[in-house]
Length: 370
Ligand code: NAD
Image (cartoon, rainbow, N blue to C red):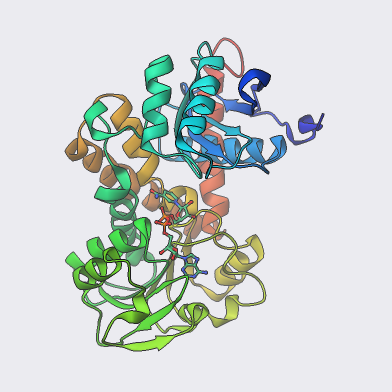
């Protein structure tokens, strides 16, 4: 048994539940980190190799993200230990079995994550009546299709440009990872007059300082092609996106892409973290020392979870987008203002903001964690 309590602190975790059903070869874990603000929302991951400690760290990240977003939800995360590429019937059995085992854990609402999708959430909802990230026919808002996180990034950008002497109109944007987050961020920013000068995917980087037609590139990618198959622009290695001269750099691919050993290559004025933990803490510190504004992941990419929380309350996409815009704008301003006044990195300001909100919620609950 792992000693997960070595990570425990004054915020949580509140509860760790291990699930085992040998008849269907189900093994899983749920970590409910903190529910002071309301029932925890966090993804259900299906992966063979996630430790309970890692599940706890992911749950904590959700506590902070939900608190920073001002949602009436705490943070949690769950994992089914299995290969997500298994046959659909077997996957359905495991997801349904796991959901049924958590029927009474009403302070946890799961959403899709790595290895699970809206269909899995439909099975969970069918079993226990609560899940987010549902298919449209069950009232879900298809957040990757509509671009909830990209929409949030666009609003964060509009506020953040004031803190780095930029204007959105004409700002040159480079996007690492032209997927669900990256392509919508590029699309919404382009409607505000920003110019996409580079975009990458796992196969390469497309660079055109005169500007890339975003809608055209989206259609191109949707046809199964890579950005470098596009007829216009310079074709570079995937990693070359880091060196592109631009005003706004958006990581929207993988964790730890910018580290102490490559952060000096960035040639930008503003970083908006679309991906989760795309920079190491050391790399963020370097940016801070160089005066480059870097809006941390759990502020910048909260559009997705805000959309999920709105879906849970029965709202439609219009209402969800209004909430995302309002929250992202307010939180970006609060974080960057605090960072500026206290001369601290935006992540430190964002952490302080999130922890203060969790603690305020804890202070008004009868049981510290509930
Ligand atoms: P996605 O799979 O739709 O897109 C990821 C893109 O990154 C793909 O185009 C892929 O080719 C590209 N990519 C992979 N490796 C790369 C590399 N080395 N260099 C350049 N590009 C690379 O995923 P997504 O949903 O857009 O999520 C992207 C990131 O944002 C993930 O870290 C995810 O956890 C995070 N995130 C997503 C959401 C959301 O709403 N989808 C919300 C918050 C955070």
